[in-house]
Image 1 (cartoon, rainbow, N blue to C red):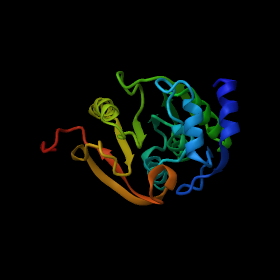
Image 2: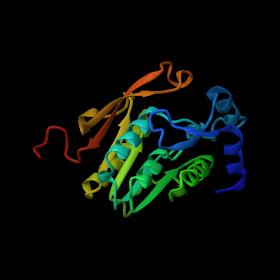
Image 3: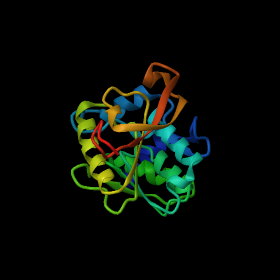
Image 4: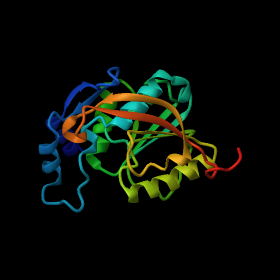
Length: 222
């Protein structure tokens, strides 16, 4: 974690409970638009948006599920993909995961994950990098919140998750009805009405589903 990135997170986001998972506190931005513009600056083609500064609906739903069903991760090695703020990773650590690895492509997100884990008194190994063309390593459970928000991301994410599931890894996804979620590949575990930022989502509540990936082709006999 670079000191510059950590300082940026502390300056622009305040530590507060997550609306749907109040057991967890995160550094969250009060006003999304200004921070979005600030982080893009003159580097709009390269600088990732500040996904780390907000508790997105998919992540909140998945973190709620893991918190309420600790047996999903307890004693297991967990990988949190596109971790953002680290909300899901922290929920897994709090639920008794043996180890939690949180991967992000944004250096500030990695800093936010580390700061947020420290604030919640848990250990999360925050890692900078794009691993979608590789595999899940030694993970026994893969968690991914709100990752099907673009067509390109959805294609890469699904390929990674299918490789993991076919290797025997349990794969859970939290999604608030994003357009590119391939629903035919999943079965529903739980559904919630999650409070969200109206400035980000244009609504105050998003119906959010926790899904488990089926490694078999749609329609295949199990």
